[in-house]
Image (cartoon, rainbow, N blue to C red; front, side):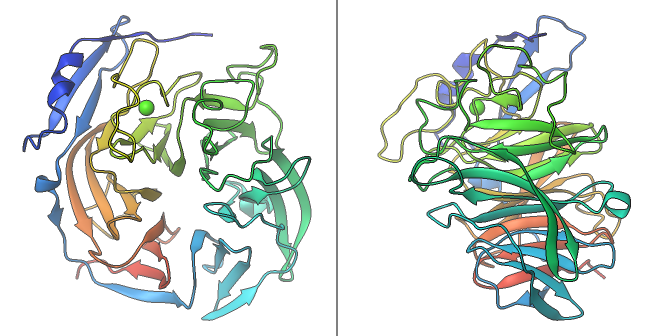
Length: 392
Ligand SMILES: [Ca+2]
């Protein structure tokens, strides 16, 4: 397994990370192999958060917590309600799909993401993640299924992955699903509230990003194939709770964002076999104000490209490739549960250079998706799904 060791040139600069300095703080780590691109760790303070005016329209009203959504080729939508319903929204009507998986609806667990196969037109597969109580033990853990949609019914259901053990803890199920261009599916599972046990242990589920082939088999070039005891579906580890995932088509990489503790939500570029550090290194502190680690970085850990202080509680992640929003094109959008807006982060390559609020005060944002026709849809808890209207 190839491992990239990073030399941290400027750990000391981070001592000023939370003092309200109004300049974007940045440091650089230089890989020993200097053919690899430099990584910048950036945070931009709240004082520099600007607001953009966009109109929106409510497209699907009357939803509770619409956790995930995707679009069928006819333009209709599949929507997961956290409580367990799968909704097909077509021609202005909501229809409940029959045969949806039974979900363990507790705390942050329930029906989570939905994503159509990149080959949907030819293979018809739809992928789902949800909290499931299948298997031994009380409680639940995150499960990945694929199925087909026929006559408003899920058919050909296949469970592709079930994390173990079940736990009655309500925290950190993840989960988002996305795909690269090489026939792989990626999905995330959070640390399940067991931060000291799961994220750094490759023999345990939780605190990981997983990679499978589209049929659920393990890619033979996954980093821990053949490693005794390891979960061979694991692609990267040391994550806390990723609830946003994109395939960045400009860089050909999977990116995730993940909830930090108090402060320290992160955007990470997912690399094979990399350790993202949780809970050994973090830019955050405990919610009671105490520090659990003095370290923000280290030679064995992959740095985030961006982190938020204070936490915005990110959920939903979109990479804008559409021409319909020239101000957003090439950039990324992140939903904020806590501050109830969509955050637009301007990108220069992999470097975040500016942050901006869109749909200020709209409500808790759960998901952000660009539709195949290039519009941006946002799921807002208690409101439904809204479409951001391009500027005239
Ligand atoms: Ca980290």
